[in-house]
Amino acid sequence: MGAMQTPIKPFYFEHGPKAIILLHAFASGPVDVRMLARYLERENYTVYAPMFMGHGTADFSDILLQGTPERWWHDAQNAVKFLKDKGYTQISIFGISLGGIFAAKTLENDPSLVGGGSFGSPIVRKRQFSVHNTFMQMAKANFIQYQTNEAIMDSKLKWLDDNIDTLLAKIADFTVGVAEDLPQIHQPYFIGQGLSDEIVNPESAKSLRDELVNSQVSYHEYPNASHMITVNTAHKQLEADLTQFLTQLYE
Image (cartoon, rainbow, N blue to C red; front, side, top):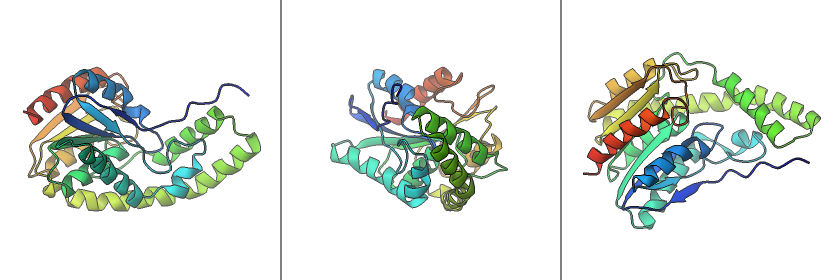
């Protein structure tokens, strides 16, 4: 056996009195936001990145077997509770992709949060690109990484191929409710969107901006960036834009 993959875990970087929750993308983990978190930590923010149920295991099937939008919503609420229990009163929440949906819902439901936002997040749905195919590629890579027996891998991939659309439909239905409640967000909201996003239609970011009628929106586009703007060519510009937003947010 070769070197096993190090387990993916949530992380908590305790720094200054201003706390930030970062929520990861679908079929991924806190590693999505780790570089951003390290940057924010250097800027003296406390950063917490929880893990969505079913994610971060050696078997991608767990995402479907354990994960539901309701459970992930619970995970987001628990993240806020975690920081409040630690005594933080100035808390903001951001998420990338799927995480952005739950960041928005948390802001809709908790006026005690100072603000937040989303990066490459399909909250207001426009014609989407295929999440199904991307998910299947990631699942296969995951099984290979954990050195899954080939016959087992093939049967699991077949099962995922047959069942992933059911979960994607549940996420879509859940997101409709989040989009409808956007006027409930009164806190400042940051939107970051890569214009070469291969998963989320960049137009959905403009629609999100337009639906946030009661929020002061800080809107940013990254011209050649693909979906994961926390780690790709846009990450430095995103960090700079976010720093500016946070400085005003925590005044």
